[in-house]
Length: 339
Image (tube, rainbow, N blue to C red):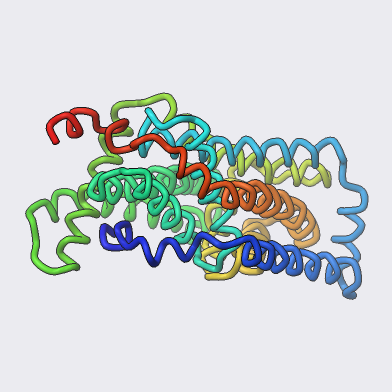
C-alpha cells in the first residue's frame, strides 16, 4: 500500500485532461442511456416501465438529496481521517475528485483512493502517514457495511429467515471483522521485502482506524456512518417513490450483499452493481419488477451526482493543489518543527 501511495507517476495518470474527462463522462452517459433504452423498449420489462412512469417526483427528489448528503459525508470522513486541519475547500475538492474517479474509471473503487493519495502527497503529506490513513479510511468506511450485515443478518435470522441467506452473511461479515482486527497483532515488527513493508503498513493503517474509532471524533463517526446511511436511505427513497418499500432489514442486508457486484472493474460498476443489488433484493423476497425499477432510479442518482461533481472537482484539482498549504506542516506540526 505504501508503494502505491508514493508512486506519483502511476497515480498522476488518474488525473485526466479535459479531453479524457469528457470521454469518460460520455462513456458513463452512454451506458446509462443504453440502460434507459433497454428499459423503455425491451419486451418483458413492462412492469418496470409502468413503475418508473408512476414514480413520485417528490420521493425521487428526496433520493437525489440523500445521495448528495452521502457525497458530502464522504468528504467529511475524508477530512476527519486524513487530517482534520485540512481546509474544507481542499477536502471537498480532493474527496469529491476521488468519488468521481471511482465512477469515471474502471478501477473497482481503487482509483479514487489512489488519486486522493497522489493529491495529498503533492501537497506535502508524509508517505508513511498517507499510507496508514489511506488504509484507515478504507477500513472505517467498509466497517459500517460489515457491521450492517451483522446486525441486519442476525435480525432477519431471528425473525425466521433462511439461515443460509441471513445468518450466513452475518457470520461471514463478523469473521472478516475479526480477521481485520487481528492483523495489527500479527504484523508489528519490520519485515524485509516489499510484501513485508506492505503488511506492516496494513497493520499500521488498521491500528490507526481502531484508534480513530475509539477516539469518537464526531466528524469521522458522522462521515463514515453518513456515507453509507444516506446512500441506503436514497435507495429506500427510490423504493418509496414507486410504492414498494421492503422491510428495513431486508433492504439493509440486500444493499450490503448486492454491493459485491460493484467490485467488477467497470466504470462506476455499471451493470455489475445493478445486477448484484437486484439479485440480492429478489433473493430476500422483493418482487423483480419493483427491485429493478427502484434500483435503476437509485443508480441514476448514485452515478450521476458523483460523476458530475467529481468531474468538476478533477478539473479544478491542479489549481487547488497549486494553492494548497503545506499539508505536512499543517497535519503534523510537531514533526515539522523537529525537522
